[in-house]
Length: 250
Image (tube, rainbow, N blue to C red):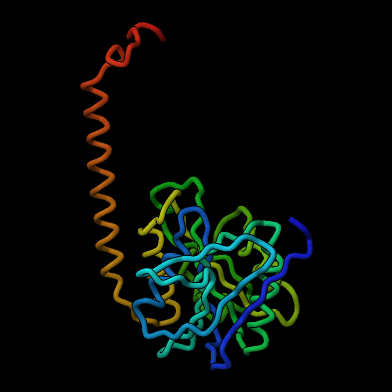
């Protein structure tokens, strides 16, 4: 992997929203799941994509039709553009990816970036919520006191870390990151639902989340049944049944 990695944004000459919502692939896939659900359940138009000749690509397929891995959409009834980034961008390429995205954002008058970000980290029951990391301007404009708790500590890396770092520079868009615990390997549908709820409360978009809620319930039921079967099998099959003496590790 060389240091001169580059990405290109190819986009139609069309009106964009003043806010760019970013859902990028991370362990747990909460952010990209939420962003993809948003563009599929609201009236949206695919307006462009991000690509690179320097790293291996993936070709997502839907109903037998291939698609670009990092797609840009505009929403018809909201002042928002959306990036659905299904490609996992390696750390060495994160800076170039962020540079290309922010150059496109600046050229199209995008004033702020909202990142939907699921992160695997240890958390208690009261921390299974949405936290924020935001510039002062973004917080003042979008996050009234007490709406979301600030993330108390840690660090952001990869594409998200690069976007936040750029927001500390002059002329860069304001950035707000919505962070929630995610559980790999994913997709963590419950985490995606939390991010969608956050986006609805901040930006006023109205999306029917019933399909995701149904999928979440199906997954919970499946894993509960799987856990029960595993526990039952462990009770019914002693170690001696696998050719081991039960006292081997005593």
